[in-house]
Image (tube, rainbow, N blue to C red; front, side, top):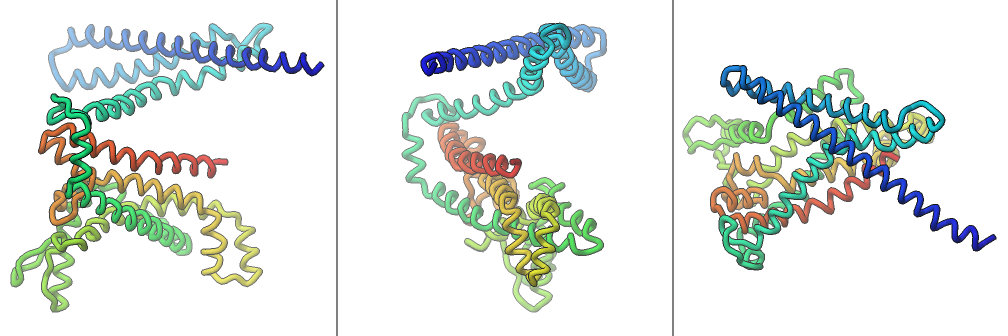
Length: 384
């Protein structure tokens, strides 16, 4: 009896694997057939209609958008119709057909997006890795020379130091201020208005925010009229104006304020939703036990939303590792404010050295991936 069970287990596993492979292969075949057919029909319609319409870039753009949307609808409708023909929801095998169709159907929707995103993610990584072993413009093979250069480059070390400084300050400050804002705005009658005002910087591009803060930090020689808000306040109090974004070391913090100003709204919205999800029973029990508002906040509320806090923190951390726009617009990496993303931009588009730029890009990727994996795991824990 034991030997029969032992021998049937591998057979059952093999059958499950075979069914899984069959389902996956069928999903791929239907997906590819749908994509090729819808793309061919859309392309044929485009060339047929464009031959009739006058030559106009605007009309062509509108036509491409309309046909693209129509092709997407055609793909989803056609692929689902084919699936329903293969596994009809009727007959003696209706239960089996529905099970198999439901296993395949999500991949018909997700498949094209996964394939396209995979191409756009995998190809740049592979290409960057190849370019990192080549010289300027990616023409000559130089082996590990770019990596050796990177280890001894003073500007690279400055960029890494500044990036770690940003990592220490921005995620912590943004999450802290966002948590405080989320807590306070839920207690006041005009909290929704306050939340809208705090969240508003999120609607501004990083370049736009940088221009705003560059005017705030603007410096004019002593005796001239100060148009920068900060120096206007400083001179109004009787002190000398300062060129804030050129002050070594401290100018990094003045740049960080811009990103903190933007990301506080993001942290506030996410954490506010998490705070509202805390069961009222736990808070009421703490009040009955005589806990102060401070104790309720730090010992009851914060521990229950710690997973959300961690996700917000790491999300902002990933953004900080890629920070580029603010540094480019405000200092262009001068006066000791260089960061990795801007340094990569300099070598790629100004120095035209694709090899060195690719090495820096790989360093950024190596720093981002572990944090991103941890972030995904924490998000999954919260979903459970």
